[in-house]
Amino acid sequence: MNAGGRLGARFGPYRLDHLIGRGGMGEVYRALDTVKDRVVALKLLTPEFAADPGYQERFRRESQLAARLSEPHVIPIHDWGEIDGVLFIDMRLVEGQDLRAVLRENGALEPARAVRIVEQVAAALDAAHRDGLVHRDVKPENILLDRNDFAYLVDFGIAQADSTGHLTQMGLAIGSYAYMAPERFGDGDVGARSDVYSLACVLYEALTGSAPHRADTVGSAVRAVLLDTPTAPSAVNPVLPRPLDAVIDTGLAKDPAHRYPSASAFIGAAAAALGTGATGNSAPAVSLTKPGSEIPTTADPLARNESQQSAANKAWGDMPRDPHYSPTVISGPVGAGAPGSGGYGSGPYVSGPPPPPGSGPVPYGPAASGPVGYGPSPQPYQPMSPPPGRSGNRTVVGILVGLIVVFVVGLGVLAAVLFMRDRGGGDTARQEAVTVTADAPVTTTPAPTTTSMRRTPPAGSTPCAQVYGQTGAFSGSAVGNAITSCAFAEEVRLAYSRSGPPAQLPRSIPVYSPVTGSTYSMSCIDTGAVTTCTGGNDAVVYVY
Image (cartoon, rainbow, N blue to C red; front, side):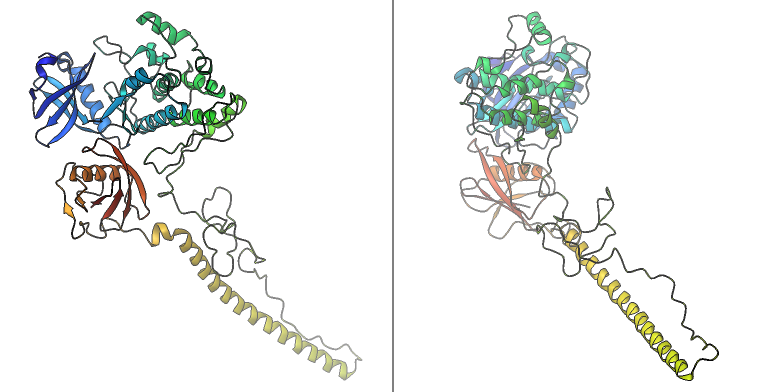
């Protein structure tokens, strides 16, 4: 059936209402899922793909891999499969434009906006790479933007969980040649750094208005990618600071080993370069906290010129941890442990109560490292016999001195015993106090979990019909007022479960509304029995 004939027709449970786009692999429709009563983006692949068993297997595998990604900037996949000999993917419909349309209408973007958009795509790629999934088709057409510039990475249609396959079995080059990494045209491994190359191409075009390699034929495009060096971005767009040229050049390195180790490392270096204007017209420093993320990814302020860039690149190799779920750490040494012990050392504990968290290093007093050690007991005093000829009063004096010494030694022994007993008990108590202080948030006072109490919606709320199945610890949602829709409540449940385990600390998450087509920020806090999320336009959602 041709594209015109599909409009208004039924495809399984879907009613095809509008043709959104058409490409070499198929068509994308705005469709109504008549079973779940929701509007979706439905991608239908051309029939020859379904006729290829090898491609069918690859299609199902990549769809499953993409659907399991729990990152807000990866477009959610609702369903996939085959109907009447046609492979399909049911995805969230985003009201907005792809980046290609934005660039076509506006040309080069304002630098800070370009970085904000590409930063979100970098977060999606890092999530995919952690799952062993390489996108391999990163380009402006596959980056969707809603009305608030919230970005989604779509179309993992060529994604694979390994590095095999540079072309499909049908001989079609996957992706646009201008964005394909050089190793795609040879026998080198195709991995995460191949996506970094493509992302660098996207940022180059977003900043300059043109792709780094322009060619009219496939042959010239391949030669350009393999052999040519792109014009420096600052030469194409004089507004851009020159330090950015080195960042883009590293992202577009021919050798994957010379590129940034991750997508976030690349965009972090780009943001740092944009914050150091050599032209006087550079963009302000860009915050690298992606919407809804709790992992602040701050650009290295030391990355100020090309000579410092390599150090900045290494610093960006290690991703910071989520502060809500990191181990509890006392901001000062508790024990003088051996290097690498990573725990409580065998040194002395400070007398008195432990310092409050954040009070700085714990001062060590004069206490010795452990109870005072006693050597062999001194030889018992034996009074010496007076030498012959000594007077009797000297003997009396000697006896008195001996008794005094024995008495003093006895007092010393008694004091030592009492001291050791008291010190041992005190050290034990103090050790327990310090240990409990350090570990309490993790082991002794855990936050309520779903296993400790039953999760139920509060009285007065309206439970919603389940759109998604079990999502992490949650199975249902409810709305707390009349202006909040159940469709939005279910999206809140999905987004919160993807953001991490329930937490008693407030957590902000971006949530897409299928009703308005916009993305809103919701603040959620868990009380054990229910998670309450508020935000947007006075929305109140309960997740349980």
